[in-house]
Length: 143
Image: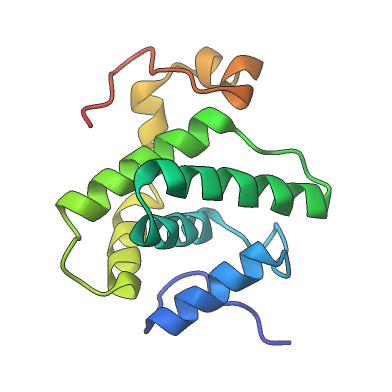
């Protein structure tokens, strides 16, 4: 079996392949890095409005983690990234193919930690933040 591509896409079919592997849980959690999360989230956002894409991401992440027996789902982190990625996709990277948008956003955002600018460690690591949306306690979201 070929390893699923998780970044540096050259076409939308490679992106769709990653989304299928994620939705069918055929990719391992150890292979599903942050850049793969970003790619799937941007795909969902390209196909639906923010609220619907967020529901799809939440439900698929929960099925994926349950299938693989890992309990790592975090509601605040998921919603934060969905809001940020929606903002980026609609304001800065709108007029380009999905694969190119993903590559540019991953290149810029996969290595940064924007959550730390908005949340203290105590809030983001809390059980409440894992289970429900908690608004930022440091810097409000500008979008």
